Picture (cartoon, rainbow, N blue to C red):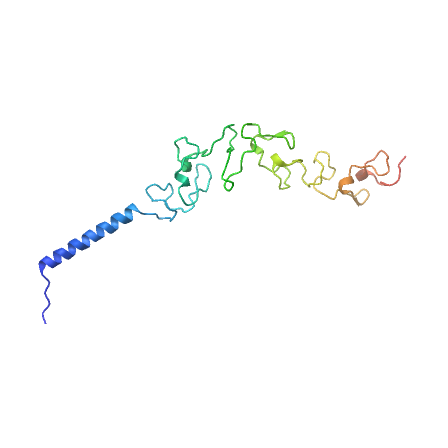
Length: 199
């Protein structure tokens, strides 16, 4: 048995193969999404990172088209914008957020970020935690109360001990540390005999 392929059949097969390869390559180039974030590589500012973390503003834009949006309408794409959200008072904190990525500016029209809770103008440190008690400065009634015992550190004789233990009289005074149990001239924490009036 003899098998023959005509020249015309071979040319036709090559043409079909070449056309199919061209279509396949063109489609792949048009729809390339290397990181699987839903954005074509040609518009994706970080085509090899699904998270789309921006070094311009420190925001993790995630999948979707948030990175190529323009939230503050300044003609700079969010990914490249150092301040992608409105900041009407110019304090470096965004006026609003989606509740997930950002902390909302509690005083969007006050660049000093004055807190009526504690009477302090926090400026850029309103979301800090000055006393390490896990309460943000702006909302903390006593922002300088490291042991969270209700006494400001400046008046607390034991600012890092919420029991307010006094080694002078071996007593944990808690909230009565600045009291005067025997009504003498010494406060409880400094009185060697806190229940005897000292003459």
